[in-house]
Amino acid sequence: MLIKGAKGIVSYDAMETIRNTNEWLGATARAMASYPAFAMIPHPMFKLMSAWGRVTERSFSRMVIKPDWEIQAIAGDEGQDHVVYVEPVVRRAFGDLIHFRVARREPQLRKVLLVAPMSGHYATLLRSTVVSLLPDCEVYVTDWHNARDIPVSKGKFDIEDYTSYLVDFIRFLGPDTNVIAVCQPAPLALAATAILAEEDPKSQPRTLTLIGGPVDPDAAATEVTDFGNRMTMGQLEHLVIQSVGFKYRGAGRMVYPGLAQLASFIAMNADTHARAFIDKIFNEARGTASFSDKHNRFYDEYLAVMDMTAEFYLSTVERIFKNLEIAQNRFVVNGKQVDISKITDVAIMTVEGTNDDISAPGQCVAALALCRGVADEKKKQHLEPGAGHYGIFAGKSWRLNIRPLVLDFIDENMSLPDSVRPRRRRARGGPAADCGATDPIADGGKIAV
Image 1 (cartoon, rainbow, N blue to C red):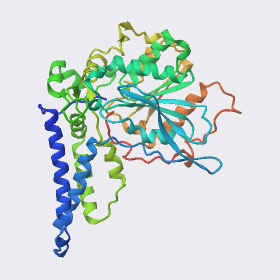
Image 2 (image 1 turned 90 degrees about the vertical axis):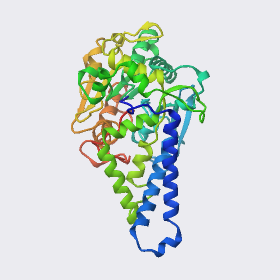
Image 3 (image 1 turned 30 degrees about the vertical axis):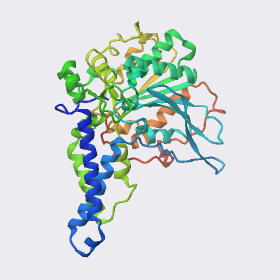
Image 4 (image 1 turned 90 degrees about the horizontal axis):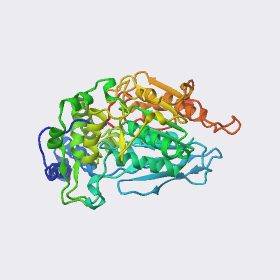
């Protein structure tokens, strides 16, 4: 989800200069404190200095690096490992549709499109979600591009363009697709489904699962909605919108910088992040840390941020949060009214977490009331006790409780006999639920999407 930006006005190049300088300082401290001659001086200062340098250099360098998917091989029933290849199947200027092809495995009956949020992090934020679904599903993901790398000549990209991309992706995959939209794109995935229901019913998805999304932001107040109501659009544009510097291909494009978004992410839980980094530095100094420990796995992803086009960020705030166009069924795409009540044949499920302070309970389930044309037996809702925002799509709550419910929901609407229905280990009531996906942060932890 889109949250408040950095206070004050800092130019794009100034933010990049600050980041670059801190990376250099970390590298310098690491190199100086690791000089062999200092090993003869038994003072902990040098170990702490080297540890601070390693943590700082890695942290600031990750901010401009797109993480790799790093999907491990899938174990087959016959005991053979199946390598997973990440392959773009539709290429577009602002985002691709990618397929996780499992080598030497027959295509799975469940075809799932994971709609990743465009809210400051890359689609790799859903890595553990993908890993948990791959054994049972044919998985596709929307892989959005960093706006700083898209030339101005490619034009604009706002929420109407985002919705049109979803329509095209779902149409490409065909009517047996099961769409799972995570957080920010939930209302736009709902709109895309409504467009297909009216214009191309044969291309509608089989099911639509909305996870922790702001379909009706006014249904439950959070810090995010409070900020959106306090700030005028003029103030917001003045404070957070910047022009991409000449270092990148998108020079001159107006964006909401990822570094500004990261500052606001960290500000939401500053004490928690500060403690995590202090602990990491001391662990490095003691020699008890490792290259791929829990801290590094989480922060390598958390700190990797991407720029959003200014028009996408501003139109999301204005039309989704302020004007409530989806919540009031007044959304317009390319000059045409989108009527959510036109959805009649798509099964709808919503998932929320009781401890979600990004998209609080009530915001996402509002989608069911909007889908007046869908029969009650094709609607389902789930409220996960004790789950925070991250936990409902990638944490332990997702793996043990929510994922099995989503797969059951998909199966129920696939109209397949039990004899050919995909076999799957049940999660509730047995240890087989944990699919092996690592949990990079505690289930109640916060990461804004």
